[in-house]
Image 1 (cartoon, one colour):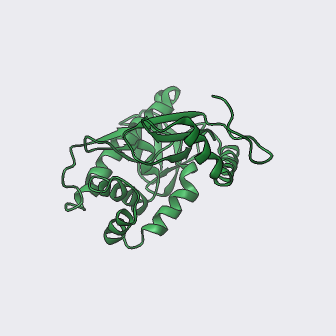
Image 2 (image 1 turned 45 degrees about the vertical axis):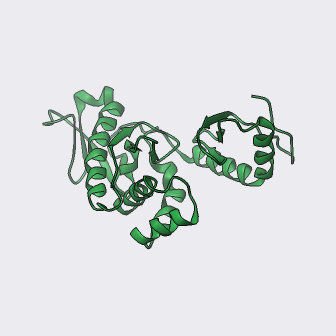
Length: 232
């Protein structure tokens, strides 16, 4: 897409516009540093460009942060001694022979040597199973907030840690369970509240706070460490 009007030394570029039935504009800088704008269906592009230009400082700051995080991130090699996160704790990996399952977790992660060529998919499958179990358990902790919930999906999303569809389906990426349990709980509560409050208004955050008085601490952890919740 064409560059947005330059407002400082570095031009801004809208990489993608996602139009839905929403009433407000939202900006997302994805894990690649790309700018995604979520916009109402009939909002003119000129209005979108004007909004992006007004938020130029925030966008550039966020892009700089994301790109710095990407430089720090090192793809997993799935070798002995390498550490992997689960519920906020770091576990070393051991490559073993003839394990009962391709991947087990005890005091360490144990990966069967025969499964190592498919190590990434083996880890992802393991995280997916854990994510569904953990998240369903957390939803059950908040019965009043989960009224109307239709289903839960575990996804491969790379740029969001949760979403709530118009059909009352909540979606969470498998990598979320790398975070501490209280942080996972914050994301779950965030999306549960969206079942009844569709925006991020003051009413929304008051509802979140009524369920998790320390939600800001949990949210701040995710903002600071979310880039670490990955295998590549």
